[in-house]
Length: 326
Image (cartoon, rainbow, N blue to C red; front, side, top):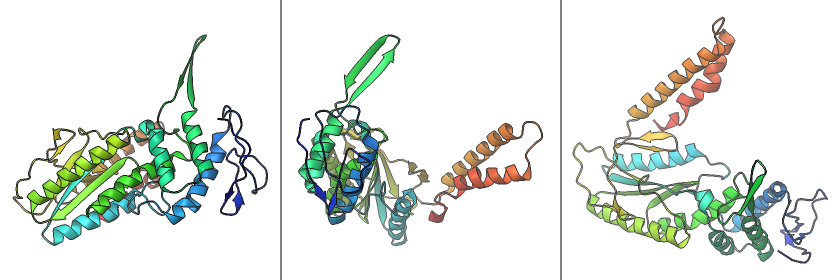
């Protein structure tokens, strides 16, 4: 991409996406090519610019818990479980659909990124630079004396400092649309959740079916897809014999009710009694203990110091993850 030198002011600070080592007040310079450019420093700078500038005025949806300051898997789980528990205490149903966007980072098209940046009113120079970074990439493989080189047509750079923010911007429109429909929607990177709460199960199923059709349209418009095989439907209720549900279809496949769903490392069951999750965590912790014992105590057994380290560094984090939910 050819371009003359540009002087761009980001919130009063001159900015150089090519990551020079000069003082903070810099200017953007686009060279004739973007080959052999060190992308990590400038991606970090651009990420800071996006978060301190456009995203400060138009922030990411508050229910996107990935790559956001002060949020994590546990904050997402606490928010979700609180909603479900309030519904069960009120004698209501909570119908949840758990989604997984296929290859979110690998398959994200450039057009979707450009649209998301434009909606956030990111300045043209930055949009052009990000577009060039994504579009002008090649992958080389050396096998003996042969070299294979191909162009990367889609996806975000793996491990790039800017990629999580770009994906959050792309996925943000889906969360916003679902929220406008009056339901609880939550995202964590490429994992998503739709939760509908109510008393009339047939009506809830009709709403869920309509929302999933909207998710299909959103994915089609952005050249993404959700794997219907990995999409799971779970009905939370304390009723001994809940009402029958109406058929719900996603990508022309009927979704059947699951007896359990693993979401963000936690196993959910219809009554939220956590028995299966606790048993699974204890089994994994015990297996890890035996593996560690066989590796560090082959000759003379385990010393008290090593045993304490095994418990504090490995076992305790496994069994206490999301322990505050129960």
